[in-house]
Length: 146
Figure 1 (cartoon, one colour):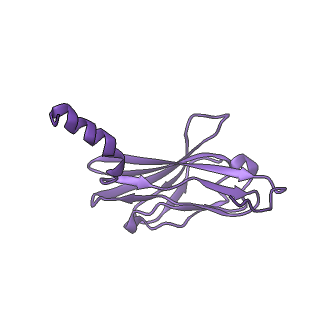
Figure 2: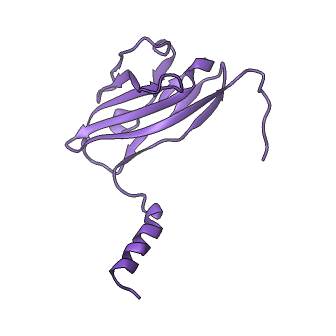
Figure 3: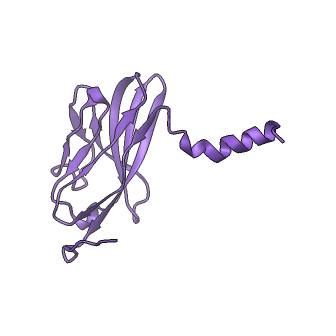
């Protein structure tokens, strides 16, 4: 009854509880058009050296990720795509704390999509987190209670 297959079953059943190890954390966001939104991402459970943080964006129409921002360990940022975000995105994180968060100001409907935060660390490589952003039109200024 408690053979090798039984142990494997137990590991598979409770593997969702194992949330340890190096990973990027962040969550989906919903914002009303015209407001500001913070997209948070943080690399946890590592002591490796940060080489770079990269932000990408994809949409339902453009499913391929496109880099739009690089953040270096000293906090210097570089915009590498002129996609309407460069003048409205601010880096609000702290590379020394492995915090790669950004703020998008005056969100527009076409900002909706999936943002990907990528931490490049040495020597293990890259860790990513997809952060979906939903933008609601101005006519939806009321709260929903569930």
